[in-house]
Amino acid sequence: MKGGKQGFLLGILTIMVLFSLLHPGMDAEAQTVYIDITQPNFQRLPIAIPDFKYLAPAQTELAGDMAKTLADDLDYSGIFRSLDPRGFLQNPQEIGLTQNDIKFIEWRRLGAEFLVRGAYQVQGSSLKLEMRLFDVVADRMVIGKVYEGQAQDWRAMIHRFADEVLLALTGERGAFGTKIAFVQAQGKNKEIYLIDFDGSNPTQVTHDENLNLSPAWSPDGTQLAYVSYKEGGPKIYIMNLLSGAQRLLCGYPGLNISPAWRPNSQDLAVTLSKDGNPDIFLVSSTGAIMRKLVQSWAINVSPSWSPDGSKLAYVSNETGNPQVYVLDLSSGSNQRITFSGDYNTSPAWSPKGDWIAYSGLSGGRHNIFAIRPDGSQVRQLTHGEGDNESPTWSPDGRMLAFSSTRQGNSSIWVLLMNGAGVRRLTSLGGSQEMPEWSPRLGSR
Image 1 (cartoon, one colour):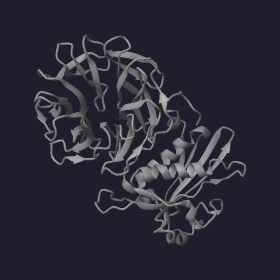
Image 2 (cartoon, rainbow, N blue to C red; image 1 turned 90 degrees about the vertical axis):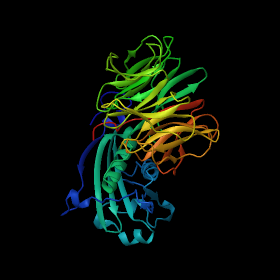
Image 3 (cartoon, helix red, strand yellow; image 1 turned 30 degrees about the vertical axis):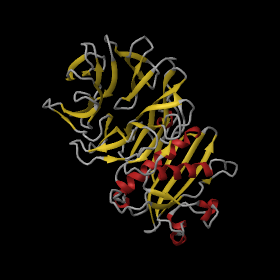
């Protein structure tokens, strides 16, 4: 499949899954293995990922990089623990690719419960990549895939297979093919950038040489709404990420800030002060005002939609200091849900609808918390390592990205929902702020 439109989706759109490699006599449903990772006693699954097998002797350079990229992906998920390849007993180029060739007993002795075998062949600028996941305990193949695309897009193929692995073992795809938008501050300017979910492939998407803030993904992942001061006061623009075209969405007098796309819709919640007070409005894809959602004498900002679009979390200072509220659109009733701490901002509703993450001031530091939408079960996920703000969920709900000053200037970090697995994503110089995780990108 040849590459089509240029841009941020290139790595996903140029990949074609040719076919699934099903074990003879075993249908796809029979191969599905569901593992409940929500249990408190869940232990990461040990998985062996030897270097990939090169089918052309002169094309050895990707063998180790492919295996390491897949191992990193699965480690990041919080579900797997990749075994050290230095302990493997065989030369990776001599290990078989099919179930009949695998010496399962030897992998079990090494402590592996799962094994991935991969093989690849480069022809000019094209790549054919084959990957199989084996259940070492059950002596069988779980899934097998073959991908073809441009050789430069091999990382996207690896991420795609990692998603398939999680789908087979947990019943839900991972977030390996996603991206994170954020604000890059350098000098007096702030521009919008994108990175892959693991922090690789940083790409600048605005070049306004001004202040650009608050990126927000459209539900289909093809557009970004953002706030820019390039024409003076703050206005909301939309960029088409496939074409690079930009257009003005909201340029009303006063503030035009805090864009948030409504799920499964082209409408957005935004904060406007055109009537004097910063209130939250619902606007169409053209910026036309459809209705006022939140109105009071207070400052109302930072809308975040529930996954079904029926409710809206937002921040208001109507009780004196910023707190998180939830609005039910059908009834028009709102409820304050944060009461611990006197400065709570940046709500982010989880993709499953069961949690709202936010940034709260605790012990003189901003930390990341999660709370149930009814205000119960507050969890503190960071604990005073610098200031931690602007949480955003991965589309599978397993991870949160956020900005943190724990190692100096603000940068983008990620952690698992249980607070473990903290890792840094950006080291670009300057500072990185206001991350926003994309939905799943490309066709599935």
